[in-house]
Image (cartoon, rainbow, N blue to C red):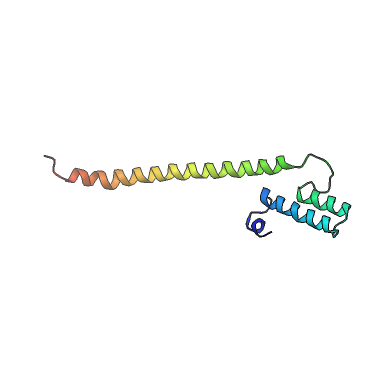
Length: 103
């Protein structure tokens, strides 16, 4: 599970690696059928509820909000950078350009 440890918790790679590990333990007889089912539900984020509707909507909504915050941050920093550039250009470079004699 070396690659899965490098991935952030809850990613598809992490979940797939955990399911593979659980399947190996179940095949070797270390986990009973009931233990395997509970562990699989926990890995899939179902919290022990045996249904096909995992709370993936909550995770994707959280991920969507994080992505929106990141994009908003990037836009804000771009606008701030543009404003700072214009202030420095107007206050520093334009006066120096006017100081040179024009032919």
